[in-house]
Length: 615
Image 1: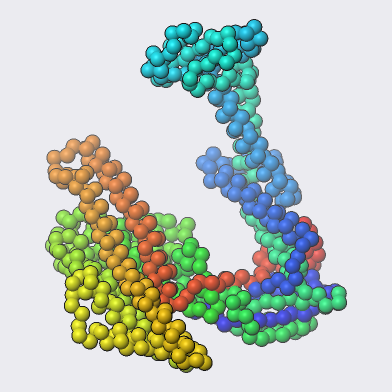
Image 2: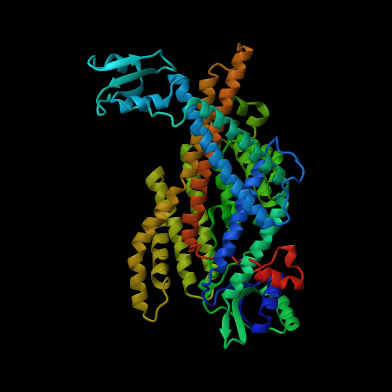
């Protein structure tokens, strides 16, 4: 649920402003908003320091993961983390330049392997001074045969499918109609010498970075301090000023933390004013749900959406619907077991929310796969006696003609999903006449469902179905717009109704993707099985079994990847567009981000000056 927020104004003496910001950061409950725009460049410098520390940490983490990374001692140790950050970044720049230079030298060495190690580029330059021009080419056999006999051509032995050709010309403009090979910059001996020197230099760089990989934790603590300093500076520069004596800031705080803030204000002698927000569109959104609902958070963070402060938290609805859509779109118990096993083995690398979300989605997929008789697209597995008894024929993937029922089920899920959206809005507007318009929309949704069934599946609409449209349209026309002018509001509603009905019809039809994509996943899996094992495994030799297993692994791996892509495209879309559209959620909110100091170096008052003043 979206937690209600309060708007606060905090006043403090300019003399104690540093202490106030530090205490506020340690309290960590106020989302501070800028009162005055800053512009002295300090924030930019501190932001750059944070970004540079992130790059240095990322560089060292890459080395800490390498198998050859080990403790080389403290030969390159530094007492200053800032100095270490700069040294690591500078070393990384040198390493990249060294690698680029080695690549260039490798190309030059390759040239000498083709044209001869004893070739001296100075001799070619000398000949050019004497107006004898050598043009070098690497040509296909067919191109060599087509060369003009008038040209003076020297041809060498074929190398790697290409024939080295030298054009000897007395005119600097005489060239072949092919790409010319560039000359190396250095003699062969210099290329070898520089290559060895660069390799030694690169080895020393790798040695240094491997050695400093043990300092990652130290730099991460330093980065926390830099982030705190950045936050402190942003808070300071964004404060308002009253005659140089009083400074103040504006922020938002959840209702549950009001008592903590008031207690801190009394201890520190702050002045404050707490009120309800005047502009809801500016209020940050703090969503707090039970742990079992919060497992959907990784998906919400992935698509980076936050409902507005006055909108509805869709977490629980998103979780239930997303699990169902995931199960139907993947639809294979074997794939679900793979997800479950993968999650179990990688659980230590996942957050708890991501871990339990994957368990939930995996089990949902396995249940749907068992009920539909789908195990890696193999009909033979579903035909086993015990598993066969668990299959529901109406949703089975093999052996029955249930296309009409599956389309009906998809439309029914769509109608229920959209009904839930409008039902929530009924509760939202329960004290307003607009609640009646949402009741009207529920009637229209079911009327559109019946119309969809008639147009797509050929089912006759019941006689009472027309009254869903008449009654629903009347409620929408009369009560969807609140206005002093009754006829004006009704006219606006009637004008919008045709397009809304068309949109609602297409929304219900779009749920058929649940059936279509799920069926495609099963069909592709079955096709891979048929192509790789057309006659089963009987009579196959050991090598053939190994090759078939590899082919099946690649084929089903591709199918799993396509199924997961379908989940991201279709499963999320049905929640984000169809459901959220009918619910009226535009995801226009900004997440609640309280100003909080997290570095242990900011934990004591005597560090105020260091935290704020040190760059």
